[in-house]
Length: 119
Image 1 (spheres, one colour):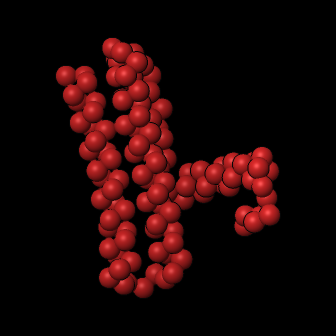
Image 2: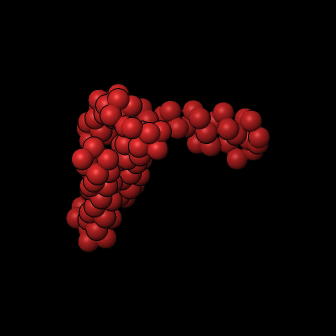
């Protein structure tokens, strides 16, 4: 739990610890995130090698970073929905479906980015 009295540098340090905890939790509990991190590790050297300019390299790498960011947000939504309850509810299903659609769109964006730059 965040310390509401923390200010300045102490608040930033606390935020870093919470962020690391979030990465660890996502790595532990979300197979899709692990797969996307592996994909990022594999594609980053390719982006650095195949990108002709700094902008192309940033777009190639950034598209993969975007996928991981969206997956983190999707995982957060899923965790909150599961916290509320596992019984089927239309709004819970909708929230999870929307999060999944966001991940799919980010993956499609990455594919389009890579295709247009490399082809």
